[in-house]
Image (cartoon, rainbow, N blue to C red):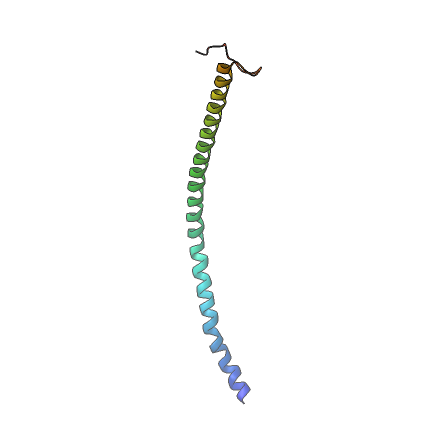
Length: 93
């Protein structure tokens, strides 16, 4: 008799859990496209900005390296010890 009463009450008790779980899942399914779309927009904007910054850093490093090499060449030429690849006597316009 107790097991029959328990069996009758069990579906009612579980239905609240199931409804809560289904409702929670429904909310997740509905909001997921919005979350994914907004994350995608942020990722594209951020990655493009970061790519631009990275390219700028690379260009500045290359400029610094060229300047350092040019100063070293000028120093060698001035001291009379140029490397075979140095262009000491050539004036650039």
